[in-house]
Image 1 (tube, rainbow, N blue to C red):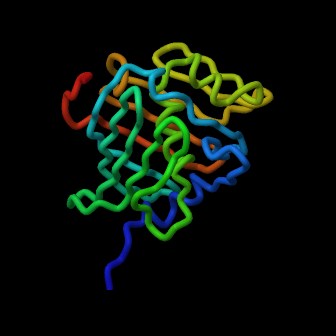
Image 2: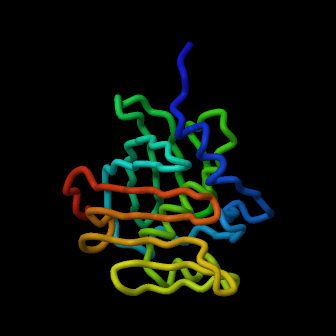
Amino acid sequence: MIRRPRILRVLPVLLAACSGMDFRCSVLPGNVSYCLQPTAAVAPFETRQKIDFLRDGQRETMIVEIEAAPEKMRLVGLTPFGVQVIQAAYDNRVAHAEKMPETGLDPVALLSIVQAALWPLDAVRAGFGAQAAVDEKDAGRRISVDGEKIVEIAYTGNSPPFSRIKIVYPSARVVLEITTLEDNGTK
């Protein structure tokens, strides 16, 4: 029997989401919704990153390939051995999963996490709307609701995709440590 990686068993906790009428929106940890923003809001880039997912003392690793272009964004998740386990895309109208494990992962939530970390500040503020405050300082970003920290993001390096990113979701007790594996630059 093939055992699916632990990250695929615990990601639903992080990405527990509800879809409303807008197929671009999802609920993220901290019970805050985010609506995907246009892909033209960010300079085009492609990157391959290693994500270390930490929760309750457990660590799992996934390799992701992210492509952002004016007409779409795409994310492919691979095991460290190169087996594709996730593929999600957004064409500026709707997010869809071309390949998702049977875990209840929401492709909108998955892509929302990418946008919250990598899209320009004004686009991320628009994605959260009036429900959340999004502040940027000291090589990082903080998203809060009513003064309570929902997400904290710290960057090392210049502009997306950055050389390292650390994303902390306190309410879900989840930390994502992201390292860019190669210098991809922009398209």
